Length: 56
Image (cartoon, rainbow, N blue to C red):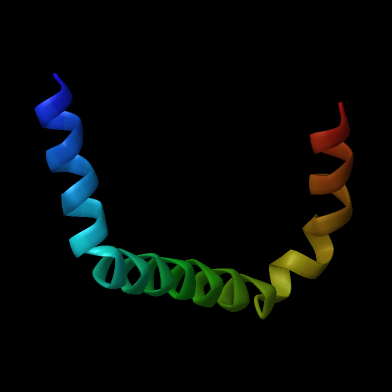
């Protein structure tokens, strides 16, 4: 079991830069989708009801 843990630790260490890049790309895609939704005219009218619905 310890050898598996060491192997995984080594893998994460070797691929840290790649993992950071992948996370940045995923975050950027989600941020872009969120930004696209903000420019939709339906959001302005439905936003208050979404907030009230989330609170209950």
